[in-house]
Image 1: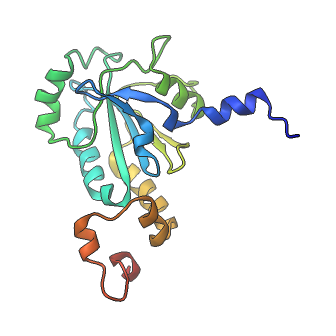
Image 2: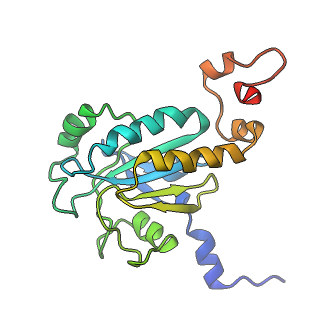
Length: 203
């Protein structure tokens, strides 16, 4: 008979994919929807000095989405009240201005007793010198394809820095493994030659 500790069971149950959130339109979204993807979770704000990072995050998403990378944005009003509007105003304002196409979600709290369970989990998994507390808008968490948080980026870390981290992870994956986890879109499929090679094989 095999005995498993309660602590290990709790740890096994605590996984990114076990959480559910609400989209910016109000629909319930199971994070298991993003299974087998590299996920970047960001707490956003529309009236912050760092708000222009939306442009870099969108570029990052468009660059790597066919490789199974997704950015998830969570508006938050806990820092300087820089996200005062409701979800409709966020969509009509900042998201339109920066032409954001990556998934966005309903406003959440990321610190304190009212923090969303997802953020309580992320902060516990990747603590900092400040403890788990998030310092400001646009803090970022990178989740691997197994649902494990692997890297935390500061609010001032620009998307270009995250680009390097993602590129390194993708470079460590074989094209075959990546294709099995993130199916190629139609345009990519048409670029596979008759020898069965993908563009990655020629890099």
